Amino acid sequence: MFPFEVPNSEASAANLLRQVRWRDGLYCPRCRAESVIRYGSYRVFQRYLCKDCDRTFNDQISTVFEHSAVELRKLFLAVYTYIRFNTSLRQLDVEIDVSYKTVYRRV
Image 1 (tube, rainbow, N blue to C red):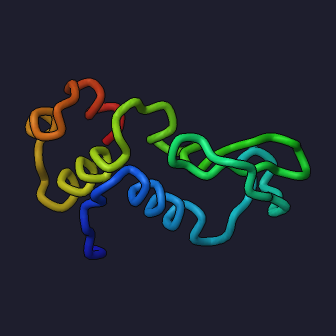
Image 2 (cartoon, rainbow, N blue to C red; image 1 turned 180 degrees about the vertical axis):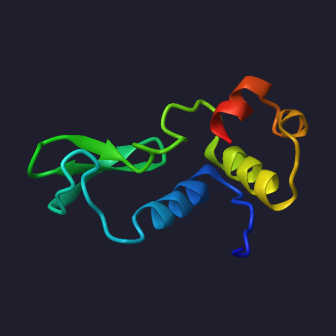
């Protein structure tokens, strides 16, 4: 298990997601092409443009965090405590202040 520090801001959580997500190199999730350029930002997430299929995407695309309205740092904390400390989903929904259904779908 890797040592984990809770991100103190949404930007640092987005940076952690970027590092983990693209550890093997940046590629388009749709066509798997590696000809990708940076293309602005969306909230705290970096956006990219694929030169082959002309689609834009960000760091959250094709992950369980994709359409979540909950802050990414809260979800990282929930996943970590669920795996590391075997915390129940009922306890997690109280601790991160979201509904049980949200925690069940994301963790």
